[in-house]
Image 1: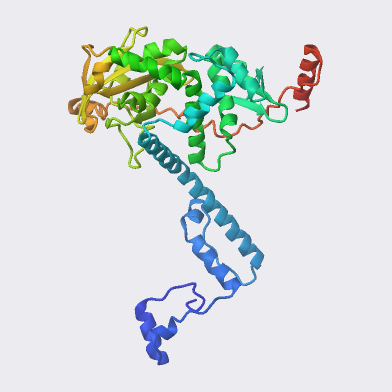
Image 2 (image 1 turned 60 degrees about the horizontal axis):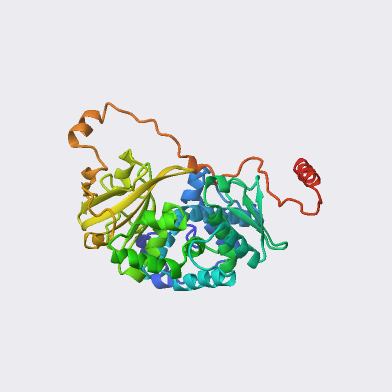
Amino acid sequence: MFETGKREPKLTLLQSIARALGTTIDALLEGEPLDERSTMEIALERAMRGQTFQALGISPFRIAKSMPSEALSAMLALHGEIERLRDERAATPEEARRANVELRHLMRSQNNYFADLEKQAADILSAVGHPGGPITQRTASEIAAHLGFTLHYAPDLPQTTRSVADLANGRLYLSSSIPAKGDARAAVLQALSSRILGHGEPRSYAEFLRQRVETNYLTGAILVPEAHVVPVLQEAKSRRAISIEDLRDAYSVSYETAAHRFTNLATQHLGIPVHFLKVHESGTITKAYENDDVNFPTDRLGSIEGQMCCRRWTSREVFDVEDRFNPYYQYTDTGNGTYWCTARVEPSSEGLHSVSVGVRFDDTKWFVGRDTPNRGVSKHSVETCCRRAPAELEERWREQSWPNVRTPARCWPPCPPARSREWTPPTCTSSSTRTHRAERAATRSGR
């Protein structure tokens, strides 16, 4: 067993053997290559003592000499694949958080301003002869035509798909529910941005995230053109009347798009460091950006997304405000200084979200809402600030309450259904709508 490497002797035993044989320990430990069969047997015995076999409930067994080498090779291959899948699943969330942190550091180093994307937005608007200012749906359609696409709405796109581009026939399919849910221009431009940027299939989660950021940035740069909006913001700063709501209304975009666009331009063109937060009504941070040293909660990897936002911050306080028509402003004293924020609540498919933009106290003088009487104090670094109940309440209810935990719904969407229905582009050869619908019905029945 020692000679084949299946067991490891103690040092005292090796010394005894060396004395008995009249040799040295070095001579006993001199390495000799094992044959392929012995190598596989040793590898399998070590695998059987590992966590994977134990987790599967497989008891170690004796490897007989009569066991075919092919069987040993197959078991080692299966064990290796199980180990790879376990490592991949364990690494994916951490890889995603690391990629997100690296991307946020890049955005922070550039003040969330990407000159190359601004240039591409200006080039595409110039190519379609856009005169400046807010773009219309017709302009969005002209951009699609300029890129060689016609627009088509389909009622049966997969839920997880924003759009499907038919590159062979130059057709762009969008969900027919998009116009009812939000800005039709944004949906079209998001679909076209990937084609403008030449995106391919992402090879990693980091590349996927980078593509999403670039797509959203380019969409915002087209909807709110830099050449037109910068003079508007500079004039508002001179009047000390910067307002995210005015930016939203001037370009007919969502509040979130206006807030994102402001963070792109505020530091680069106005010299104002800013921070941005999107918080779910449960208190979970879903999006974040900062270059004004605000102290966002982070995990040990430095990731902000997924952390709980302090209840005292504007992003959480706004959910308790009854007036949803007007923006909510608040000063918040933190351990890292005083910050002023403006926030608004918006509905989404996953519930209510608050979107907020904030600046340091010294930069508040440039904004509408600086005279707000709302004040808050956040000590989020201390658990008793808002993450834990007061000691007397905790002591009273620790043994007198029992929550029934609900399984998070987002655990299940990645799991494929038993019978999935694939989507195929509508047939385009029929000359009438009736024939077209019949062909689609026949295709579905065939599936």
